[in-house]
Image 1 (spheres, helix red, strand yellow):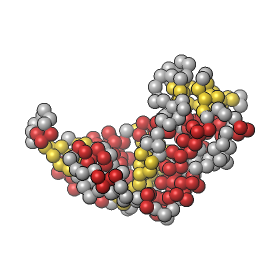
Image 2 (image 1 turned 90 degrees about the horizontal axis):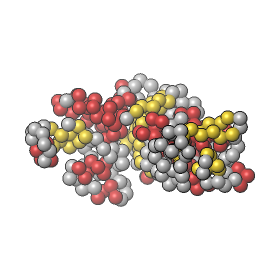
Image 3 (image 1 turned 90 degrees about the vertical axis):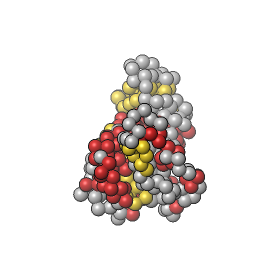
Image 4 (image 1 turned 135 degrees about the vertical axis):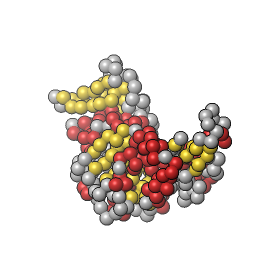
Length: 308
């Protein structure tokens, strides 16, 4: 059996001390491959069955990112590609088969509908898409019912469409003092909602930009960006580019699906005899701590605004 998860889960499940993750430099010396037996865990299966918790990549970049590399084939890529897992803790991996860098960034919950006044999960009654028709915002609601809120993809679409209509300024300020910005039914966005989106997209965009800079590249050099996570699968790529989450010059943006699940299956199929292959792949990924990067705050602030 193969298990993947974030670094905190890795430590708690394996009985390791998570205390080093609570303070600077947010690194642990016990984030490698952990092998147990089902009997030790009290599981109702063959007691000698191996249970492998795959290694984390460092800091708050867990083993989901490691198997995400496996799922997308980044470790075999000749061209420069990126894997971006969009969530409260955004994880970014950039590189080629020769060299890969990774980082985590606190994107906040806006992409998942959190910290937004009308935010909610992507379920019935949520606005999931926003477009423009005849110069007006037009919303698609999951379930074709009156909306009660909007999910992350709807938030990105709403901001992108409002930018195109001049309802939101590149600074993020609602134009002409408009507040709130009406979407559909009783659902609207206020100024604080736009700021939450800016914080989330700024954190991810800054992480991507810093990792690329360390490789001597920029967003226009990327051959592809693989978006993973529940939000990454459904976000409108055009809207993501419009708000500045992804570089406009990126050649290809792909919804990579549940890379953690697919990657875990691929790791399982490799068998216990190929653990060294997974270790070797993880060892090729260099973890970058954004908390200690002297450029992060400057780049983050620069990425808060929307493209004009």
